[in-house]
Length: 268
Image 1: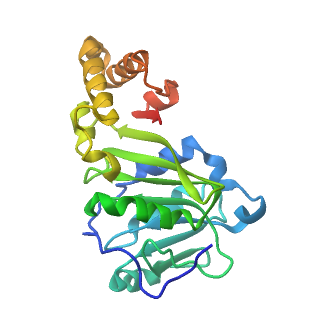
Image 2: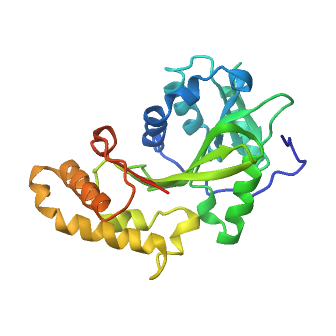
């Protein structure tokens, strides 16, 4: 696995965030694969969760630490920022298992360190689409086979987000496992809202003839066809639209534990 290059690769984000902006992202991971956070076999025994691009202050990293350590009190957590001042400002919050280091897509790992999970939110949205694949390829070099990356974009307060769920496979590359959409229903339920925050590899492809365009057109039709379910609440409408979408041939996870909490998982 590669280690630190002298110069962090990437560019600074705006860095702005809000309290608990990524809570629903963390809650999704805790539901989707809690065993990834507790694995102790082989190199997983001491492997890291990496919060890539945490922003002006380390709150997202510290909030994740509090959540994830409910299932693994010994989980090692690394917050990575490309801005030196942000890293320096975070140092008072570091401890024996929480670290803040200067870095970019070339993760600042020390000798012997490995990664089980990367969260990269509101990071790649500022890049050109041509930079998406190289960034992903670089990050795959640091993650253990079977590990995950969740990468996407959220609205400013985290009420709505969309993300790629990528699995690291043996060939030192990612397998895009699913595209995940999340809402807490505070702003209602509008399919179009998800379209505006798609990950970089999809957002410019909502064009006729593209699979992501077909998906959104089908989801919009499904939402319209099931709109009568709104009388039972937005969660019921969301779930009904997902069932209709699955009936149109899309591989949607219809388990109540997802739909009832506002998560739509489209397996790719």
